[in-house]
Image 1 (cartoon, rainbow, N blue to C red):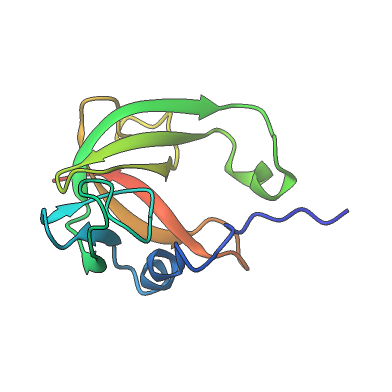
Image 2 (image 1 turned 90 degrees about the vertical axis):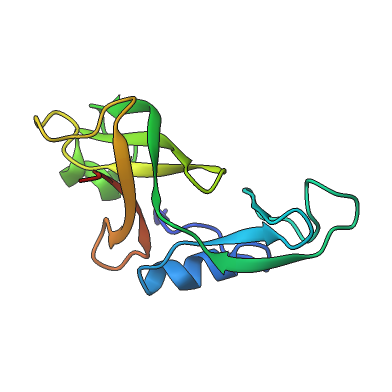
Amino acid sequence: MPEFVSPIVNALNAPFWSAAEEGQLLLPFCVTTEKYFWPPSPVSPFITSGETSWRSAQPLGVLRAKVIFRRVFQKAFEGLVPYAIGLVELDAGPRLQAHIPRPDSPDAANSGDRVEIRFHRLVADGPKVPIISKSN
């Protein structure tokens, strides 16, 4: 059975993944409250029937938590072990999960660090996904 490592792209999240391919962070935005939010929704989570749009957001924030994987759970990621997934609280408001490469290296991001989200391919034929790096 083939293993799929691509995200499920649908009408709600397609703008995020299209922007990711261009290296941009695009998030849903409540027009009335002027707040970003995640996960995507056709209506604002802040106000009943609130209008939404997609807007560029600064990819900066604070790493709040990370978990390191030292065991292969998906064959496609075997060459990346160990790797980590982190929860980033963006300065724009929402929290996103992102990949942390080489989590054991001295320059790897740790909880409480200022970080930046960039977009890279983890596997050759895969999509660009959010990757965490320390912010300068």
